Length: 337
Ligand code: SF4
Image 1 (cartoon, rainbow, N blue to C red):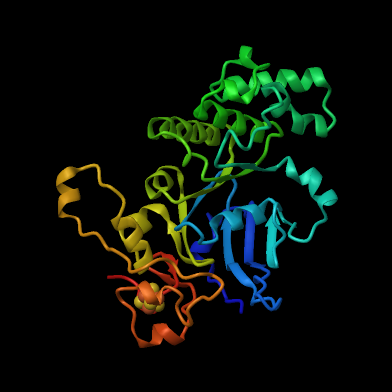
Image 2 (image 1 turned 90 degrees about the vertical axis):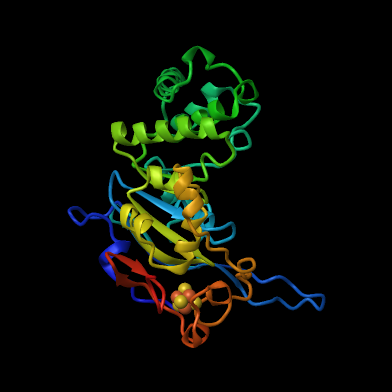
């Protein structure tokens, strides 16, 4: 079932048409076959996700492993075909375009992956990796190579290393190569799927700084997917919290971190380490019961109710929809403290 999404917080800044508009996006994978060969019910990995993104804006997409955030990201760049819903990019509906019709749009819509080394072809030089999208678009080999060297410099790599192979670079450098590749076609939007989670903490900060700088200098917009709320706080303008395939809270980063309204958001934020040791000692941690349920068998009503410390009878039967609460949108019958 689709739900009416209030425009307040799912929407970005209202001054210009959104760069990206996502409505009721759903991904249902086929259910597993039983021993008798019968297929189980479809698994709704993403279940009616809606949001907008303005040019130059960063939306952080957070939630536990399996909440549907990466599946959402992959649908946005059409690496996965949505089961239903719409994706409008620069005013054009792209969710049903053929791969051929998508090709010219791909230059504006790129992806950065989690594991930099496994996302780079080990048999290709950096020159080839970065310039490949340009060659596909008809650039000459010499122009594409020159552009690759410029992008290496822009992303903090040494252009003289252009003929090296991915294994000759550290994890952080390999992620810089992935970012340089994503920038080769001058995109307007980058979907970054856990871009720093495979890196050491010190290297994470360097890559986050790089992405921030590139956003400012190039006017990029990001959908930044991560499970680390500290990283998301650093890079995002707005944040969407996902649980079991749905957005349960979305809004301005400062408001959401200062005063989370959904019990799940509160629990996630209570686990983020505080820089002040005294505040960390005073802080009460909210420990959730059990693991997230399987999307193959979501609980009725509010899907968070089996783990929610505030659950009441209505939560077991009626699914809450996103509603405006304290300057953001929240899907909970009893938001707030
Ligand atoms: Fe908890 Fe009920 Fe709100 Fe769901 S609707 S998050 S169970 S209080």
